[in-house]
Image (cartoon, rainbow, N blue to C red; front, side, top):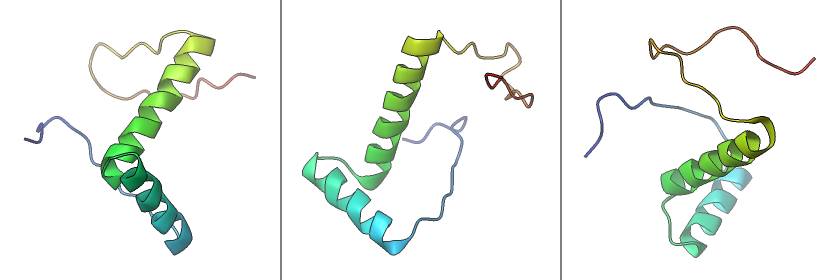
Length: 70
């Protein structure tokens, strides 16, 4: 069941990337959506391991200010 608080992320990908994503997802036993979520979680895990935890704002709104290294 979908959580009403979940956010939707729509992206455009070229046909080759789309095919390869589905191929890998099927190979690993996931849907394409599941594979994308897995990859996003892995990216966040690696980032937080290197840079420290990302703290969610108390109000639940996304931060607009860039926090890039300079």
